[in-house]
Image (cartoon, rainbow, N blue to C red):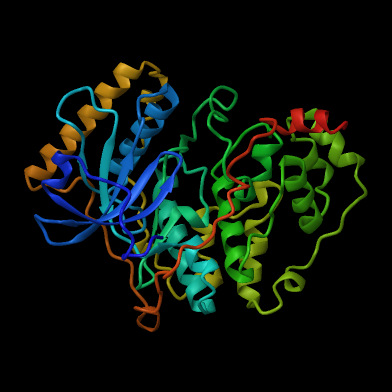
Length: 407
């Protein structure tokens, strides 16, 4: 996160600067730049995400369209980031989209790396909010597929919002066609069944990621930091032990299955050895989330009801979405068609907002614990990020990687 004294590298186009005053640049990624701005109309500070080169490739246009549609579908939930405004150039020649959202102090990655003291109450509240938002997502038959600390935004009052739906997919998507498309990021938080090509994928892939995030909160660093797919698998096996035969038989990759069977049988490492200061309930939840077999992993509803989260759990205040998300647009691959669809989404959004209507549902608010209010600090200096888990330049699947390594 840039210091407010630095000169911003970003310049807003005229159609954007008419309403927003650029305050500072917050960060850059592969798909765009995020900046803090002041809304001249409301006087509030917002985050503006500039998504650039949207129509350079069909995969980028699809990702932008997916993100906008999903954020609109989930609008109104406190633990999912919402769109406040969207802007593009007036003509259809636009190649950039500016999305205005709530301004949050930091992401969870930055909070963990900043080494500010966090208590078990912080861990509980963060995990509770992740699960509360994820319940809403899963109830619409959507898999987020990219849950990680960097995609969890946090403010000074410990309020947390899930962001970045660019890799999301529907539960009913074909598992053989398209499910792995774009799925090259975030190796450290990826469920083993994704790497090992299990016969089918379920909402359990997101629950594995929640377990990895809990482990990172408890230990202050990622649990499984694999250099590549094979190393990632080895690190998982080194902690969870060798899976039983029934689980191994469901691995779709024959080469990966043979590789695991060829290894010496590994024992489970007790969680209390890895996290001796963690509470028994925290370790029990961690154990139930980080199960190698996805069928043994807790669902998000079961996680919310776990004793570790009982201080916040209230089934009446953990809504499900009333509608399944429509992924039918995924069949469109023509850039011009997707540009028209994005333009239509923006126009419909603006019509609803101009008419005084909410773009989402009116939902109950999550209670905020008084003892945690106002005690999260935004990191004053940029936090160095390790992108090795995100920038994967090697083989695209574990089969290819095992073959390359001579297995």
